[in-house]
Length: 338
Ligand code: NAD
Ligand code: UFG
Image (cartoon, rainbow, N blue to C red):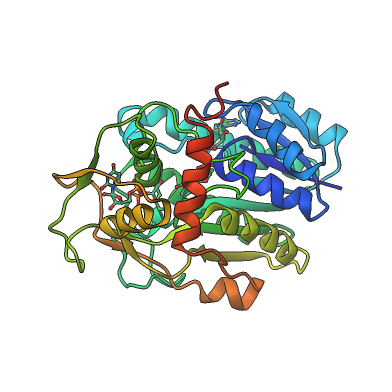
């Protein structure tokens, strides 16, 4: 029996493959490499001393999916594949809806045809919109998303819930990630954004390595302790282990579960800068800029439900996240490019 990991060559997917292989799972990765490269999977295999099967292909390609389910005994799917750049989704919404939504519908249809009804889906804290309460529990109502990317997550959650409701042979686990950063301790795999990073930590590490001059902080007039945006940063290895916990949960036939994956601690942009500087002894020059449209002031979760129901708790703290992000960036200034 094997686990199909869609989008397994990407940032969170590659770290999850390491944890799955270390736990003894057989892994099949399907990725079209639109935002990743095969080198990440070469390194995953080096790190674990184990092999996985890689299929280069698209979740929109029914034939490739059929072939995988015909040749492999897939017991569950961890579904990471998707486009994820918030700003880009505003410019090319059709591509986001087609890739993320049509792609998932094709995947789920092929799963159903082959009698595989276990799926763990990569959702996001973005589905809470501007959250009704802090810390955010899973009972907090979903909100208005500010971009097409966010809507794909919100709509896919609803679709998967409806499919599960109509057929209780399905087990659907929706994992709402907060802000994954950091990298594997080895410094061999990590986040590899194309072009100028949109997200905070890759921007900080690229300033530290000298590829970018100065961090722009998007607003210092939010209603937060220092005026900059507060988020729940979570080490990507903790997040990856959350998927192993979710797979174990699936063995209990839980039908539908929704979990926040975060640490429960909020750090501001300035906290991240200070922690990065302290952990790595590197100064990060910054300037204050205007607020970024669509950003909210504060977003952090209550991770208690994942602890109670899956026994999952984040282990790494902000110092680990800053050190590990820097080890990856400094050892691989150009990501996976040789
Ligand atoms: P990533 O871009 O590194 O990984 C996504 C992978 O999916 C890439 O390897 C890409 O090549 C692949 N892919 C995209 N479309 C595909 C398709 N049609 N067919 C096959 N492969 C395809 O992103 P990530 O940060 O690892 O995110 C993984 C998942 O988690 C995504 O669904 C993302 O939306 C979600 N998520 C990420 C964050 C975050 O901050 N990184 C937060 C919340 C949710
Ligand atoms: N920020 C800056 N400068 C930058 C980048 C970010 O000041 O160059 C600030 C933002 O304004 C925000 C904080 O740093 O206050 C974090 O921003 P990120 O872009 O790193 O992360 P977001 O919280 O905006 O969004 C991320 C993912 C989304 C996901 C969300 C919740 O990009 O896909 O976390 O999981 F939905």
